[in-house]
Image (cartoon, rainbow, N blue to C red):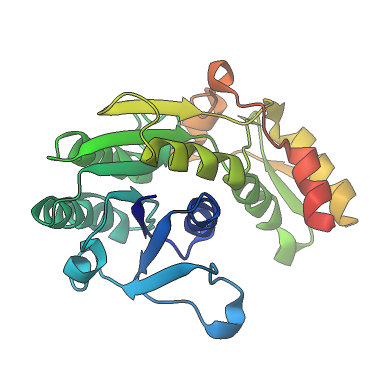
Length: 262
């Protein structure tokens, strides 16, 4: 049994990782900028919680104390992303090294090599920070979560539509499947200082996935294909977000929708 620190452990991926690690019998510490509300349903039973700020470094020493391995699933958007992914990761890893933490696992995004999208470039900086750190690092790149793809469709809700990126395919993956891979890596699976890519079981067009969501949700809103601009749209249309050669035999989108409905 190891003492596992889950950084960013109150988010979607973090809760899944913490729950998976607890289920396997590990001692789990969840670190986040804010601890969840008691009534939010986001506490993982069996995990301890500490408050940290990666950028300022506040709370890091307490968080990494007596930890064997850390799993970083922290996230940030906009201008804060580069601060968290570069400076914040540096703070975390240097503090962890000083306190004798030997191993680190990072969640990243599939297909970001050579990316021009600012978020992806920030993730690449974060990956380099991990691979150049004193800790033995393992990076897991994943395709888009089912939840993320669904959120794209729901962006048109206030306009009475379902938005679907035009000429785009996704390979959505269940966050629970990614959590299992991350905890496997925390337990030593895979080569040290390596990058592993995982994807969902099927590659499907965004429009097909939108139809599945429409049918499962029972909405009558029409599906509108929208051409996504900028470097992210270009990358998705080029298929760089896909990894069919690394597909996991996990929970597909339609099965996830059915399970969510239940």
